[in-house]
Length: 399
Image 1 (cartoon, rainbow, N blue to C red):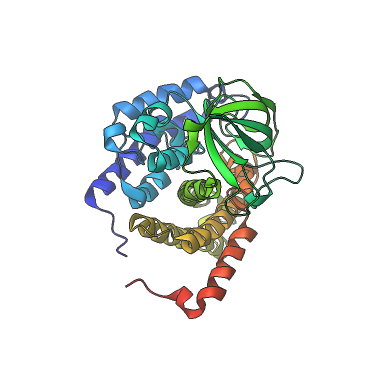
Image 2: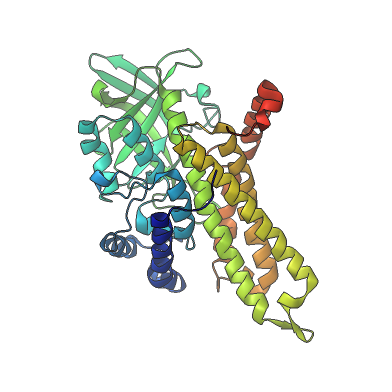
């Protein structure tokens, strides 16, 4: 593939960079701008979003006829990375998780009428969403076949009973995608549904405290006790729940990588500025060979991650599922984000460990990268299976 960005994408990238520098990064230093979960206060986010809309920088991933920019996955890779120069940038442009993945899924599989009801409010930023799959007490995580939350058909409705947990963004979300068991077949026993927060028969049991800063809505445990979902709100066919999951998580895993690369580059920015000015034994830290090795190693890993991510994005734009490419990017970029934050903290010393910079925020956030949307070990297993099936064809060049 050609890694040169089309001129219109490059122009947008520079606009996004300028917007983040002017409107988002200055907000990071004021503690009054944060909520109790170390994210930007909802009122601050709302004001940012209005500015982004006014600048024509909104919903890069969505169709133009619905108010987005429709830049393709390659364009998303360039713009998401730039947006994530601040961890709060994606919020401003409506390309943050979990709404981003939900919007991409619904845009692919809903009818036009369903999109008006379930997708458009998400694109407009009027509501938030959550994807309810993971379960406690032996339920599903990386293995959806272990799902025990069950949906039973009664007339023209489905009645749902069970539990979910670590559901990102659930507190305050309005639109939910739910994966439930509808049969015993390991491949076709799951079905996906849409439900609205205002429907009775379910509740948020608790918001689970986590190590790192949180997305809006946290990570919640849910209980379903007779939730009724009309059959018209079923996604695809009965038994297609695993397919829905794969559609959603495929691109969503890659958009995580795009955002994480932006954060990794920000760590380098902070560390680079510091070592160029900090004096030690008659020279700047940047002139010390050991410091140069540390910076060079992270710079190399970030660049490798960008190439992996962009190749996977390009293949998705060509209609390929890019399963192996996405898994490779997910493993490498998750490791790189953690390495970039850790190295930057080490180089900045006490300042990096303090809250005078975002480095400690990013460091705590980075630890989840090797877990979310499939632990790194799961993706390595996927790559191993692909290699054993394809042997040397695993390394084929596209023709």
